[in-house]
Image 1 (cartoon, rainbow, N blue to C red):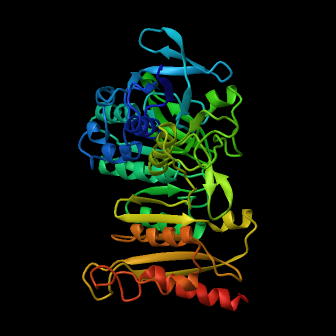
Image 2: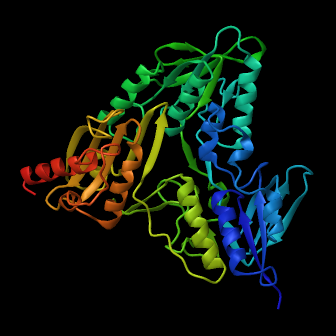
Length: 462
């Protein structure tokens, strides 16, 4: 009996996790696996690119989890520099283009995995394609940026403008600072880190100012100017002009679903593919999708959302590979946990912001506290701010945001577990968390916030 053929579109986290898990469950005699990747690299950590650019990670190859050769040794036919340009669902085949030779061909499939990832938001602005303007989505992007920095040399002005103040924006601001650049961050929003409420984002802004990073809020970029040789010379907003020797775009990403859309596959309100709990594309028995190209269920808000994170992509791949390989797996959803940093400032969030809760039709109270990540008398104790949202009347935890220094960010994991379990803030106050002066005050800051939230719920008639 001929082996079934699994075709995987996309050679990074979700795609190759799915291929690898399917291979563990079925050998080449049962399942042929063909994977297409349009880039030069597979199975790498895109989340690590800012830290490689900054120099915290020594080498590009440190970010690569498994090489194409290692995948092929496991009987996965991974075809690099090959882009799938068309998906024929009725004919159960994909059309691929070899970017090196220019050869195009069709490949049939019995089962298909779509793991096309996300594409960076690149605004249509005059000068956006000029030399010295960089995105940081792929390893190729990171290398191009490092090459650009090397070409500038150490003499003369070294001014970097980062467009966008989300996770990538603040991480790249730190990277440019470590390269000795004068850094300006242009942020369209009210405060940096729009994944936080504005009052918490203000803390990030103040900390960035203290680090020597100039952050300009409410700045709508209208164009990029070039100088001799066509290299970037400045970024223009609706209010001012900012000299720049290098520009980094950190505006965010969108699901890469053009191929799937053209094939008539279902997408959600944020542009991501829609799947069931098994990561199977809705309405299509033999097509799965995972990673940054899908929308997933928000367990707190009860609606789908697009969350581009390597953690989820790898889990999606494991679930897909298990199901394709004859096993069983599901991905129930997310609570929206994310952490980041800029220099020594740690930033974390999970669950809903105030505007998310309102959009979901929830009524809520908030509680914000200031504490330290260690006992106040212990050396190295630093300030930490925790904000908590709880549902009115029920007291159900809805979200937590944390801004602080060493040891602050990973505390959000306690809140993530509480959200997943559907705990109330009152239940959280009794959590038996680890305590010793080097690690926490007697009352952990998350529990202090929970206690204050309980009072707010009761005071509001909860």
